[in-house]
Length: 135
Image (spheres, rainbow, N blue to C red):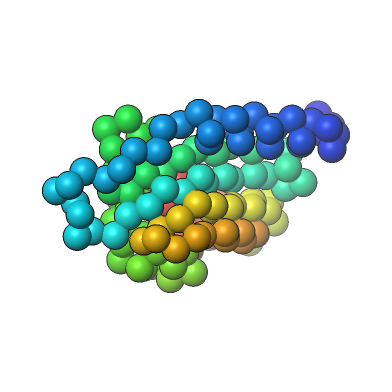
């Protein structure tokens, strides 16, 4: 399947529409002392041949679409909201080149976040970022 630049633009527009349509709720008062934020996360395959994305609200909310929202928020909390500081889930990975690119945009602990990294394959992504991009 060949994905044209118009197809990539359409996919990006669709993900943006989903992000804008997702309600960004304030954290419950019980979590007022916890760090929090709202991030729109994406994962895309080599050359944007596929892309998926969702909003992550921390502290997690019941309506979250992230399958591991509580774990992802805990990992972000432990890293102080610094995606470069995620501990991940260290394990060996095959030496296969099938690049994946991830992005995080939004805010965490009152600070803007705009982060992007490309990993050699999804195994290395998971080893480096743990549950945050595991969706």
